[in-house]
Image 1: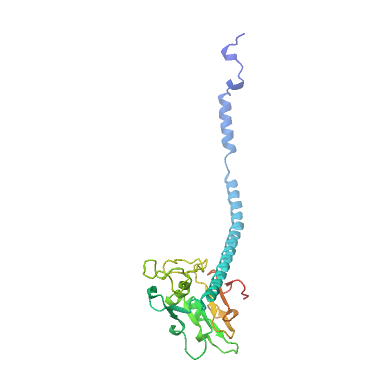
Image 2 (image 1 turned 90 degrees about the horizontal axis):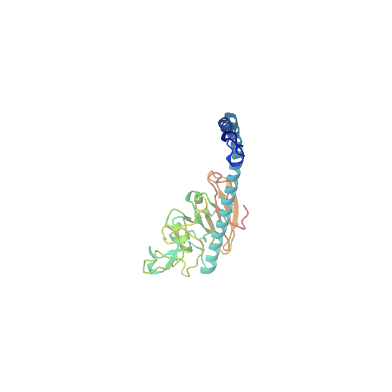
Length: 271
């Protein structure tokens, strides 16, 4: 039996809703997917609260990670200095090249050539490397309470003497292109530290996570123990340490935001 065209059942794949139903359906879907101004304000408010909670946590975690990195690097620096002393018999920075070039391969003692050293008949207490402003405030006393600050051999990070420290750790000399490419300050080419710019003796360096110089203190006197006061920028004592000929320690002054109150020391040091 055949049905007239206009009376065939409208079902299955052939079924089509009336035009009014299509319009109503589209309108309904469009209305349900829209956000009101109140809903948008609520979403923005919730996101703001979540960010206010999460961002400080991320900042704290990152700061802690940087401090752990600085502690590990300070420890590596102090251990490198001790290894160097064990290997060559003197601290890095205690000797320097005999000439401005490494081409002749000879070295000489650095102590008598440093402008801050006074030859008053006493043994130098220590070598201190770091920022000029910090080292200026470094105070030292011997085991009798005498002030010996003026006899500290200071190697500032902003001049040639300061570069001697990391030049001693470097595995190369002036440049691979010079006639004497090996380093007289490290003739065995021992890789003591993962240095920055090691290929260039003029810029070789080792910086903390905040791109600042580490402070490294190395004892020179084989018979006495000296006490050092570490001070902040306003002269307040941060910590005191004892250093002998067999001890070296390093530290980072930390983030500029809390510098002077939260130094980060190498392993084995108790502020």
